[in-house]
Image (tube, rainbow, N blue to C red; front, top):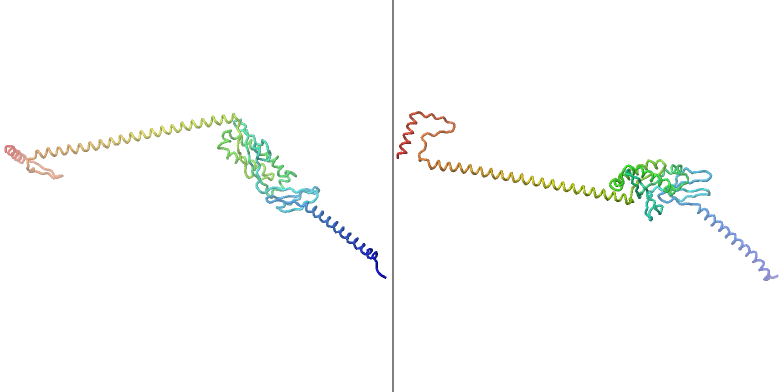
Length: 317
């Protein structure tokens, strides 16, 4: 008995049904896998380079483990908090293109001359890995941006005012600014270091003086300029006086030397004239008595008479 067309169709139908079911089942399984993988992957977060992280569980609180930069699983009802171990800059300025607040955010400082001046202040800080648990204990679930905009900003404003009272406005805007910045750094380190925030340095940057302070600065600069000009003129007059004294002393010394040379020459001329006159009076005879140095000569009356007689004969001749 042969197999007809209807029998073949009956056998093929169950096969197609099974294939369809297998295909649908595989698709469902693949879908569940993809959804599960997506959910699992979505529960992972990255701790970026230059940061460390801690996990806070809603049911169990803070996990007392500090995680280095890595990809980490963050389960349901769990929050990852990251803190920068690399240096961060907090800028408080009136420049609308700088700082975390795009508005007038400079710090007003009152100096010891009762002048109120706004200053841009720049702060560099970081969090040590060993201080992460300390900073979380102090500020709980606040992230570092919230801490910077509230805690650090408030500390900067308070300590800048403390430093400002040690200077007048002109000094703080001029030569004492570096010294004041060092003092501000030390105060912030002492205050925030115990709370887990390491301050690297803080600086008083650009000031924004009002018209009254600018006029005081102008007057002081003018006064110091005039004082310096007077000092230079005084130094110039002193140099001119020293030069005149030196010239007069040199002229007097030259005159003295010239006079001494003239006097010496005159004495020599007188001696020569005396010698010439003595030579004119010489009678051509050597004295009968010639004394040697240190020799004592005794002339008797008879010798003296003999000498006088000889002289008389020479005169008669």
